[in-house]
Image 1 (cartoon, one colour):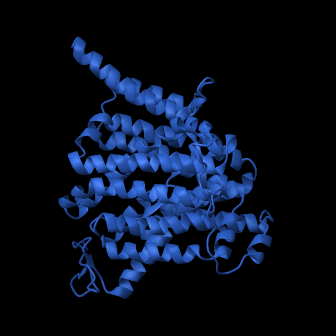
Image 2 (cartoon, rainbow, N blue to C red; image 1 turned 60 degrees about the vertical axis):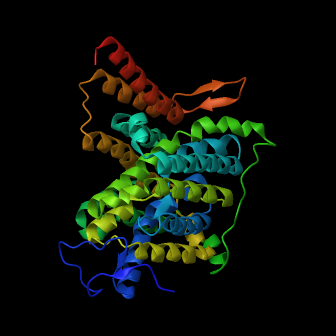
Image 3 (tube, rainbow, N blue to C red; image 1 turned 45 degrees about the vertical axis):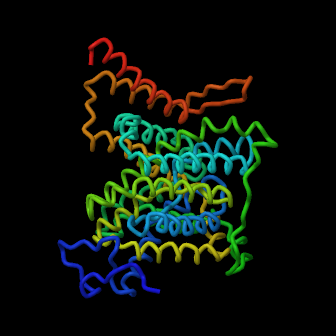
Length: 426
């Protein structure tokens, strides 16, 4: 069978101003090396989500790899992307498992994936202009920012359990981001976890008994979602989960536009397929017990640094992830990461999610001298950070800070805009 990629130049060298496009590849040894680099880039953040939420790291890695391959197939090998664990789901998953079960959280993940797939199908049919109208930059930035800041108390809860290891981890993340050049500088989260893990080991904070007893090879454990038909209370979880779809849309669309800017504007035509693919991958992960997926900024960084956008490298990365997931011992090592290390790394990571929202405002030059932008962002952020909660005991529906803040951002922006146009005060 003839593979779909053409060799770029001699397959060995990439000139300083050249870009290896999605339909091209380097020699296979170099392509395998780039694919392995993508695995390392995504690894630090991808395994943190299951560790923080109680999901199986091996199962998450399995569906991450499968989801990446599915994404490449649906986007016709024209859109390079790795699908790693989405941090936007941490808060609703934590709430769902605390009040219900892991199966309930999986139901929420599937619901979000289904909604994202539907949005993708609509975009493929009518275009993406309506997304910009519903979710302009001030709204999109507010939603992404409030999700990151909403998770702050979770970081502190872990940090205070082992403050020394947490501080060492946080320092390693911060310092390595400016100490190293190139790809190492982009792996600061991974480096911080490794340094913190070594510190925690020296301090006797890790029990390796489960690692010693785990086999080297075996299939990841699969768990199945709860059934909302037999347990109607599960429908009450949806208000906490569904707003996450707005973050996934923003992440996917931003990723696609970034790749299009660096390679070929025709990549934008894959927007609908990209959203559909991520939605289906998220549903698949939720159905089997893996964390929900999204396109990964860490891998965008690798592409920007190497100027290699070949989808062949992502096929390699997806296959590598699947192979790694087949080692229970590898998963057991990840499970031993102690609370202090998690507290240190998430202090930086959750804050970075919030700052990404701020970056959306800056990149789109949002004018905060306008009251409509001021009140949209201000109200949504306070609701998210303070974690306002609204519950209706009659229906069992609960809106947490993320859901409440998301609704507030959309309603306030469009409500104020409509009133301003009606009154001529815009």
